[in-house]
Image 1: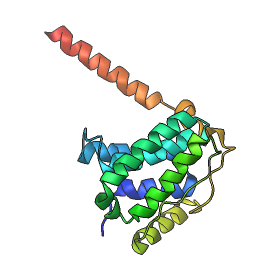
Image 2: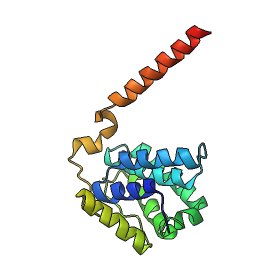
Image 3: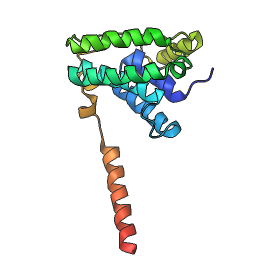
Length: 177
């Protein structure tokens, strides 16, 4: 089966460098292209898994719990779509329910592995990790401040520049009216 490139990238980040922020970024762009506005999309369910883990790793247990609940709800309703992505859905739901329990009890973050049943998908993702020099299945480096707090520490100069460019365009268009 052919999987979207963004999904492959999501899995590589999820199981390789454990960069859940990038998981979110990769799949959000894909979701916006293929299923815009559908907050019950299976893509959103996968995004929420990464977001919940990001929150838990940072010690935001309330945010992690809420997000795990949302992910479980979507995955439950989208079992077939998730299964079509090479994931054992029932096993995934067991993992997520345990993570929800852990976050409600404020247990420390532990990396998880998504239960991928498609051997070709798994092989492709491991190969991509190797190409990038990333070890598949390595535990998250919780001492890596940039990884743990990426939303605060990342370079956003390109985003800011684009916003400023769009503001100038709007101002120019308004002045022509």
